[in-house]
Amino acid sequence: MARFLRPLLRGTTYTRLLHLWVPMLIVSVWLYIDMSTPYVPALMLIPVGLIPAVRMGEGVQARLLLAPGEQDSGISIAPAATWRDRGRTVLWLETRMALSVLTWFSTVWGPILTVTLVGLAMGEVPDDVPVLSSAQPHWGYALLAPLPLIATYAAVVGLGQLATLLAQKLLGPSRAEQLAALEERTEQLLERTRIARELHDSIGHALTVAVVQAGAARAAGDPEFTERALGAIEETGRAALEDLERVLGVLREAERPVSSRPTLVDADRLLESARASGAKVDAEVTGPLETVPGAVSREGYRILQEALTNVLRHAGSVPVRVRIGVADGTLDLEVRNPLTAAIPGPGPGRGSGLRGIRERAALLGGSAHTGPDEGDWQVHAVLPLG
Picture 1 (cartoon, rainbow, N blue to C red):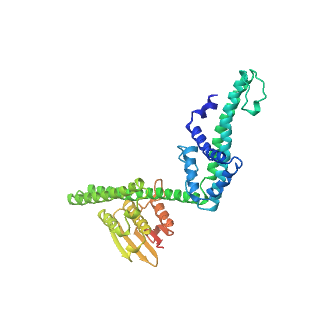
Picture 2 (cartoon, one colour):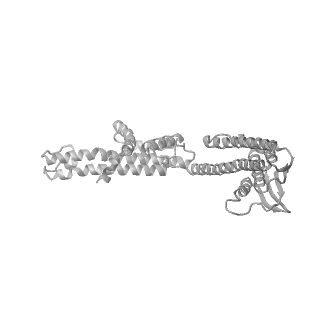
Picture 3 (cartoon, rainbow, N blue to C red):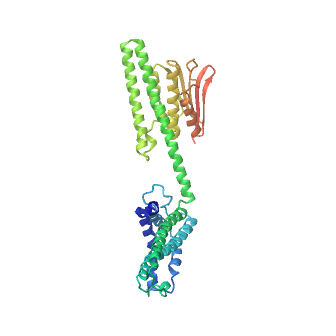
């Protein structure tokens, strides 16, 4: 019984009732003007529903009154963009008016019938209810008195739920809106993946440099070398904090531009950091790096960062050859170092950075090769500029 009466305690039941009552107000005004043509309000809804903004207004009402407080109500609040959307809006308006008429009859005549049945049970003969005008007073009508109220309650709850379902069908997102929402969701997922890579590449690089420098300083036992190592750790840590702040800024501000992230124009910072960590970096840059599109340049920077991080982490202080070339509509980036026994294998927890390099390249329509090549360990990425 308590479960049956639970909708009476929900505010949604009454907001839905209000939503269903509104069209009947329009019908009542028209019937006051001309009772002989009750179908005219329904005809007037056809041109009204073809107005694009009407769909937005109906969507706002439906969200506020039919599904208040729901984050994902399935009801759109965008104007009609196609004739199909306008047709659905017209159908919704006609359906809403029909449900409004049913709601009006149930909420008005239900209580009237209950009062009439109670009057018959008390010996009063009704003269304003044609159906019961010929009934004879009897105490047994008191047993029937609750039935109209129960029917009214069921009609109000049921019609409110039906109106909500129909609103989700007729005022729900169009195909274009569903596609836009899917694209937005895809962008969000890609952004999360990118942020994870940003953190892995930037923080991983900084920690690798710090560990290598600290270990070298402790092994060297030279105050002057220790001073240089601490300076390199400080500089790398500061750069990592800047990268971390940029990544966290993306999380805090979804609309923040990505132009603040480092690009290949800032590659000297990576090269100097690697040199300060003991690697003998031989760099060659050909072509105008400043003309490389932002997305390609940013991903190229991260590929270079991850490649240098792998060298420092697994090969140590070895000669490193870096080649960055821009020509023929492509960005060619290559990092090579002598192959040693410390090169990472497929063990647990390893290889995520190399996989990230290949994924970055594939995302831009390019390719990346990582692995042994003629006695060297090679990271070679080719990214199209188009």
